Image 1 (spheres, helix red, strand yellow):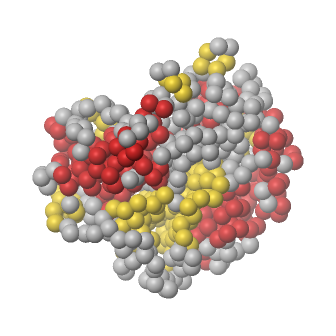
Image 2 (cartoon, one colour):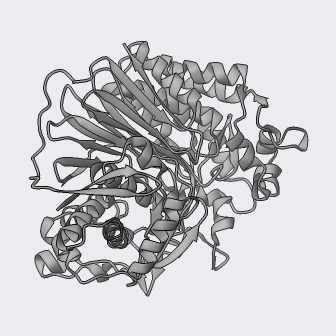
Image 3 (cartoon, helix red, strand yellow):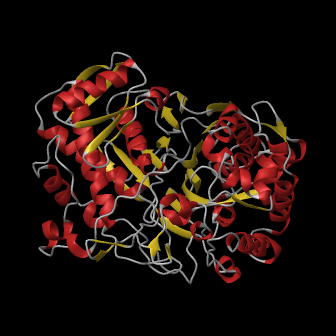
Length: 582
């Protein structure tokens, strides 16, 4: 078993130390947090971070801060998330020593069938599906806010929306990233610039908003005022719900979402899926999220593969991480879906006996990864042939926020509208998601149903992986997550292995080149010398490599050191990590 210390990012110089670590059970932390009176937020925009910190200063919790920050992001970063989308919030509450997940994933209409994306006998391609009414699920964000606030909020519900309302009324300054997205030919020439509402908002007088422009959004302010006053009921019934349905039923390809579908929406509250890595416990969201399964699979596989190889070199450790990613992705793609619609073998996938067998299966660089069979390994009853294969393409319209408050409560919150600008359909000051394109299309492959096929009321599988890592004492040690579609799994697991095993700081972990190993070809970000070196390491090891200039990550993480909070924000986006001291 090896621990690696990252001595320099550019050179990727590593020192190796032997480890005799044992895996501890979940611990009960001491009554007072070691960094009491310190708080930090890492998120995709400074204005959102400042709104969240203001909530904490006013006596709010990490959950209050998450609501305040995300409400601002829905205004200033609408291409990535907002109240027209959904997400997963992982909450650690120190007083009860519990880690709870609020599943605010969007749901399909009750009328959705497995062939929901088949129109006139043809399965919709991804582009037409995204901007169709069929892509839009019931938004979960507002209901998620309320469910989390009811349990863990400290300041009044309405106060969490003050910053976003003020910014929408007075106007926000358009950032370079938002302006750059609007300047792309896809959006300038697509539905975003042609739909009357989005055209008027994002392309006033026929020109895209530019960096430095001030943009007000009185509709968004009015919607938030209503939610602040009357709670989620005003969003999930009445005029707002009717307006969402009208947007879904507009255009050439209409969706089936109904007012009843919106009124029936429920946030799911679940325990986190947790697993061991060395002296740490890694906790993330259960299915329909991939986080709990994928993060623990990859890190446990990495540990087993690394322990079985004699080399203790940078190249060997990178190789082992990529092998673990490939195997973990293959299992995730095959088995993870909405657990209320299909059986997801979470416990078997994370069973140490299965993981040991998977790691020892003889899989090597250059092989095409295939899903394993925990049923055969553990019970002598194969289950791999229950489902057809699955390899949906990645999308990028997502954001991640990490929080820790004065008392040591932590939140890891990944939220999304799915693609950039979601479905590109607008109502009441916000964009609607295209989340249902996360279902697999077509719904059968190889003559077998796919676990992640569309279905009535079903939640599409998500790659979102909001994660909290706990140390041996049971205290939060790391809060991490990222946007990036299916590549999220590669991005987030990179930060885990970098901090927990390679000795990286939070910022180093977010800045390291991204390596995404989903399938037989490994994408390596080669924008700097480290990435070029990693590409050579992996190519020499026998992997098939695709070099890419940039990746769509937006990692925001916090690491709790013995004497300080350490923040990291992805240099590929506009995020910041800021600390306050009471």
